[in-house]
Amino acid sequence: MKAYKFRLYPSSEQEKKLNKQIELCRQLYNSFIIERRYAYREQKKSLTYNYQQNEIPELKNTFVEYKGVHSQVLQDVAQRVNRAYKNFFRRNNEKKEGKRQKAGFPRLKGKGQYKSLTYPQSGFLILENGQLELSKIGIIRMFQHREINGDIKTLNISTDKTGKWYASFSVEQENLPVVVPLPFINEPTENTIGADVGLLHLITFSDGTVIDPPKFLRKGEKSIGKAQKNLSQKKKGSSNRNKSKIILSKRHKKVKNQREDFAHKLSKNIVDNNDVIVFENLNVKGMVKNHRLAKSIADASWNTLVQYTTYKAESAGKEVVLVDPRNTSKTCSCCGHIKDDLKLSQRIFVCNNCGYKIDRDLNAAINIHNKGLEKVGRGTPEFTPVEIGALPERATPVSEAGSPRF
Ligand SMILES: [Zn+2]
Image (cartoon, rainbow, N blue to C red):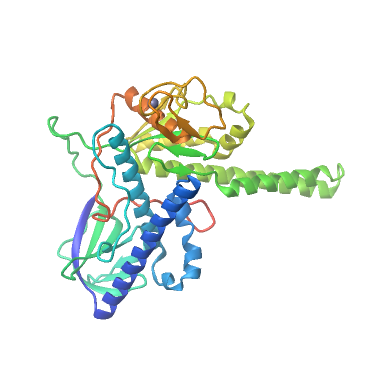
């Protein structure tokens, strides 16, 4: 990724619009942070990017001024909050390892601390005369002092203290010479993650994010159940029975497609954002005996997800590691002590040895992550703090309305 930064010359009216939008985004950012804090404090729930992003359409209906902001710009606000939390969880892990003093909880942003808008994929166009067209803002004069080479991925519109405006294009460049880092220079920082399949949440990642089973799959299963019942009530050989059969097979097919689609989107997102991904090597056949878990696994097409992630990782030059699931739930991720017993109903892991308290799934995900890194000889990953909002980062793919968003 390479960034091209050009000066913008908005008219005073456009400047007003830009400032208004930045202010709306700042308020939204703070609302998302408050919502996450509240959910965690009151319900011990970690909200996902997905969850908050799905609230945007309703927000627009309640606070109509948000209709004046491009929807991807609003989604990017949810993405920034998500990144702030991911970074916090990472820092928190570091704190546990004694590498730093404070974890730095994600903070609310005051006026002047939120200075940019990001268009993650669309909503902007560079016109032939060098002007920049922004959705919901208009055509802005831009001083493009050099050619952009490569594919534009995101656009960040920002302002500085002196009131100057800039457009930063983040560009993916292909066929660039491969740069081999010298051995004595720090190794490039890798993003690594571990994933745990659970009962409460479909997946809990070692950075604290969770993925819940999509509702549409449950709905689809209900509609299959209805169609099956309907079929059983029809007389054999009747034309109505044939019709019911067709309906049933259509619904089966629809759910199957939805599952695959879900697995594709989720695996793409995982691979886009990580270099090493650790899963448990689950014997799915063995686990299906547990009924509740079976449902989650079937919904997620867990196997499919691991397969899709593996081949996507391979083609992206990234790595999927499978580890032995033994004791991943029962081990304390803080001191390594193994508990004798941990009932499925116990949501919080409490260590008898060091007293560490943590969400059971998150504990397991951290153990899976550590096992995986040990297996590939990475040990504990190094962490470089990322300055939020400084440079537009990779965007999360966003699908059409109605389908799952990952
Ligand atoms: Zn412990």
